[in-house]
Length: 414
Figure 1 (cartoon, one colour):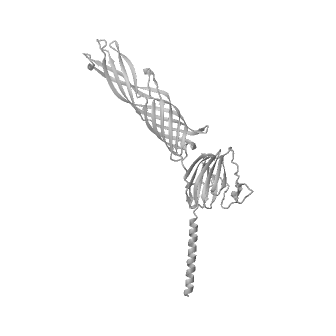
Figure 2 (cartoon, one colour):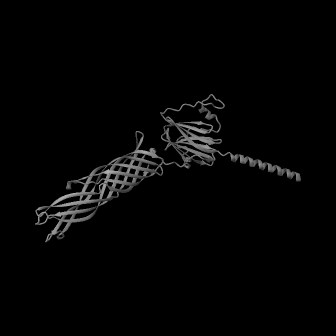
Figure 3 (cartoon, one colour):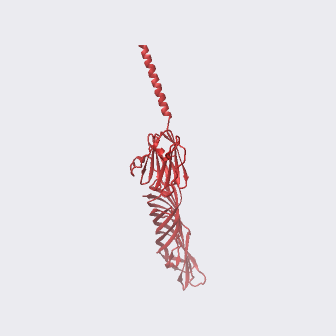
């Protein structure tokens, strides 16, 4: 009886040891998505997916936006970068992530629906060749298969085990499955659709002072007055909307903007009064005051993409607008003159001001830096200069209101 128990114990130990060894050997064989590399060749791009261990793959296509999706399994670990920018052959980028426990998902963001592709299985993993419709398709590679096969390499892919390449399903067949791979923000060259911007900033006047001269009768002579207006910071706020188009394959941002300007000016008024009975003996008086002015501006702009680097895109181009508002000027002053008619004997009274309407076309240039948080939301930094020099008919003079602006805005795309 003891011998029988001993034999059973030995058999149980051997089985347990064998199971442990089998489990260790299984765990040692870890499949890894090692790297995603690409090579640009003419109008095509070859994307090489390096994979360690045995694997199978499934491929399907989605629209709105256009994507090509690969599910590769079994994959325990992913060493490849989560995103690889390509921008060639109709491919914008490839995004990588875990879809299920042992399934890695690769999403190729396509520039348009008119992108063709060819899949080859290699010793190191997969090679996918992309090219736009109308471009010259890549020639089949001449290579020696082991064992040799009379069929072209494309057909060998279908014959090999675990390389399941299924036909493309109808658009939207697995839209909810891809949600586990978070889409990356689109760079500037990928922009499309319409946008709305709202923001504000500060503006400084390129010529900070404006001077006007005038004359008035006094004691059968002419008195002179000099008006000097010092322009303070402008605080423009704006709302604009527009859309993206392409001109000669360059993204262009077209829009219409409405702005509200709010700025202050300090006025200094100097009067030279003739003496009532002494020739060439003018008296001088000075008056200071401050005003706040409001303008509205409507403009159109066309900005061309200068560069795009991931989430950051720069646009630059011209803009033209029409500004209108009212500016407060000195209207009339009455003088009280008493003997002995020195400077201190003259006082001013009944000081009145007049708001004169000002309107004029203006032209400028703008540079816009756009940082995309997502496909929908972006933060903008706009730097611009504008030339505005309206004519004031009542004063027979011009008033230079040229400015430089720095603005921050939030953009919503749809």
